Length: 225
Length: 225
DNA sequence: TCCATGTATTTTGTATACAATTTAGATTTT
DNA sequence: AAAATCTAAATTGTATACAAAATACATGGA
Image (cartoon, rainbow over all chains, first blue to last red; front, side):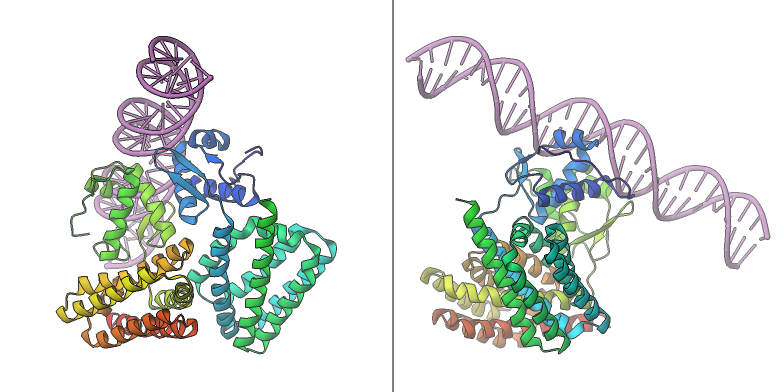
């Protein structure tokens, strides 16, 4: 934990929620590294709050799978093995297919337009090479599809799965050679939804997630060397 | 909350975990009803602990989807609409198919034997009509399949989904006319796994979950009248 | 040197105190 | 009687105090 953690206090939320979001971001950005201990007193003084909201935030992170606690020893940032990653990717594959199928049924014309625009934005950003923007556009693209499922529970599970992959996904988007594939896949998904051809969308999404899965696994293998 | 809540203190666990399990059970059994408020002081005195572990347990229940809290108003047992149930059932359908497919690849001979035995037990219990035992055998049956996926993350999501349906599922298992279908479906799944025919297992599981889904929805519709 | 033991320190677990907010009820006003 | 306002009680939010356990480290012995 070399970086500074500071609370974004503008919102009038319980501190536990502010702390939760702060720690969550820090974990996803890699500021808090896998295996790093989450010590209550330390975090409390760093964030300028008492231990109470810290503890509650840790309980929430725990249930999200971002932290692991051993009774009487404390919490640490969850470690992820290649196997864990594969496990998550398999689930995501199944649920992203489901999401695509549902979105295909439910998506409005307006949402489809939004999807197309986001896809164009994505393409534009790949030309600039600004990874942060590329990643955000990609998240938006998939969020539009998720939202179109009209299934909040599915959305929350998919967001959680995405979260687990987040750290590696950013690396994946740094690699320029993936861009053409990504763009093509996005377009296939869009065309499938526009034509309301469920099976086509399903297989397009399958490919999309699968390619990403392969790349992420490759990345992990390299890292572990 | 008419029934008594008491803590099962035999294990040497942090109180938050004991409280969490206690409240979770109470919610699943219907002792704590949907919409019922979870007041910290009340629960604390009822369980003989302070507010601290109660609050942490509530944070955990919240992330599991069993409780909903509004800041500064407190927590209540999550309410479930028919739509929520349908949402959960769709996800469960997709993930149970995935689980069946994975189990088909990974299951050992010993586990298959266990599965067969459990299926026989299930059949026996349906003859006695003891719903509690029937339900437990059914849970065991699916747990064996879940475990055979070798995917802990998938297992935990599936357990969570099952949890959401739990209250209604017990009602479903009270209805004798469902038993022959259930037994046949279980056997189809077993045969598929034994022959390692993924597609067959997948569609068998699809039917199985789908029938249950239809019955649960029917049940909700009746209840709401 | 290595291991065992004991002690101080750190850290988590739990209870409680106090503050802030919400809720419910009484009182007043229209 | 209905609506608005005020007050008291209940409830959540946060901080802190104290207890119990784990850890780190020093000391002593084999």
